[in-house]
Image 1 (tube, one colour):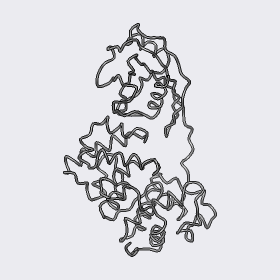
Image 2: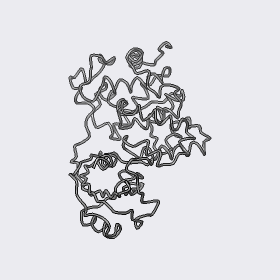
Image 3: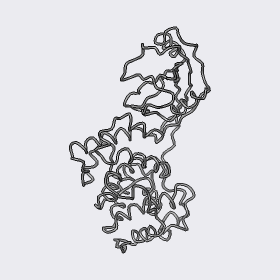
Image 4: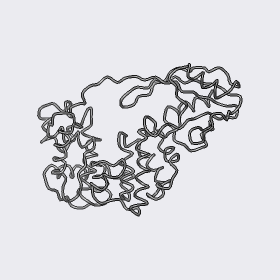
Length: 354
């Protein structure tokens, strides 16, 4: 390991800690190219490392470079993403791959500003791509780093407020060393993920404990300040699970915008009256009466979705619904690779068992 050369006692303490306590064997740390770092950073948004690792490895097997990803069908990409959530990330990933592959001959830009012009890449992700994948110094400010800096400097206010973010970016820029910046970048993410955690941080293991203002004030749990509380509403939806004797079920592609954008899902209705009207007009007379299953709850970042699954068995596979770009008779054995939302995948599993 190279000798540590840093710009400040803060960075030096972080680097020394990383040398013996950081994570050095994550899959994207092996052959760290801008492409591999980019995919990992997008997957790691709102998602734990332990969850991401198998998805990343599978993704790299299918799409070892940006050209392969750009050429892949969107349904295939969404299928591999199923279970990671926040599916706009996957759509932006392929859009970005297409731009890099075709207009940039496969080479990612080498500046933060240019990277931020690509779909799904913000300032912190751009900094990680450059620092970890391209050997170019650039600060980052993901959730883990925000937490470390807010506690160390006892910065008041919710970190995502523009005024607080502006302050944090200045601190992040000043703290990032001119040498060993890739190790420092990974170290700050590791420190926030494993030591300076959201709850029950292990301050006695932290290399920054002596200078941490929140710890000195016995107020570590108060930082960073939380987002102002807001009641999360509940929405209701009926999902129609129409299956045939041949072992297929009707799916509908959702609009590109909104929840589960671009994924395949069961047709959604607001109430049973709409379900019955659809069955009557589209499934003809050859179906049994719809039957409601117990409701299931799925939580998004800004609302709860109360799902009432409605099961109906059709004697035949009606063609009245078949607009190929919108409707799909999907095999219950999931032998066709399409993007499915997690609740839909679970309901498909239950359908196979019934």
